[in-house]
Length: 342
Image 1: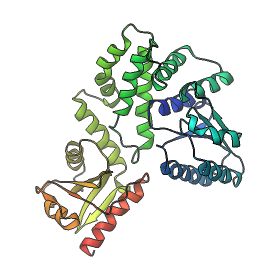
Image 2: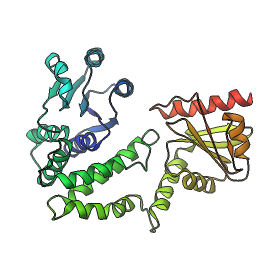
Image 3: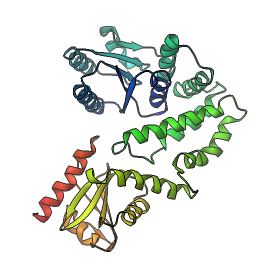
Image 4: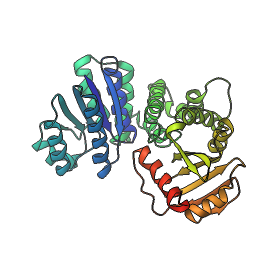
């Protein structure tokens, strides 16, 4: 049996997945997806259905910290009915899901607890509790439902901020690695639960915690450690991330942080590549080169941009952001074909 867990993109949402992983990962194969509200939920659910259809395994879908609209509930329920061996459960605390809860037996709602605590109470009731995890869950609960008189509230605030700023690994390109990073951060948060002035201690330790995750070998600055880690991931996946421009080979990334460092480091580590393009949700393109192609001319031809021979930028007005990397890369590939005629 497979477990697929779709959750929100904040501390509470990831906390739900940390809890399910804690209780279930040794028993079942697991996949994790994350979404904000609205149409993105539908797109992620379609990705989940595609995974189910490709594996043909018995599957439990868990949705947490996301309230669905009635039309989404109807659509999801119909999709489940069409597939044998697939079950769905939703664990949430947003009162706006009240109508859906009344009409769907698989929809569980309790607005007195955060979704992470709902998940913990659900799974610990089956498998037994864990003291360390319970303390962490109570910390998340204190900040998520804003119990500002709770002694764990200030620590929860630091945890919440740390997760919202953990952007070093783009999950569209590297979902598994991105989830491992988030889970590592949450695991380390547990070290500060019950500690005097734990919120201050965690705030002081966050830089070192991040370095601990990205350090593979010798120490360095956080920026260089992240770049080394990301260049490793990009290098492993480069065959699926490549594009051609006028006889030159390049790589396409999306919403990658510190593109100047990572782009240049990738080109230094992969001499067969001549340029590096990063496209963002804001439709901006960053071009980096290594002297083999003038990326200022490339940016000018493709999007009317420009800059320097090895570092340029532009605006891709027709770009459509999404959650499938292959579709993002295809848009850059099509842009190159349209503008060069090749």
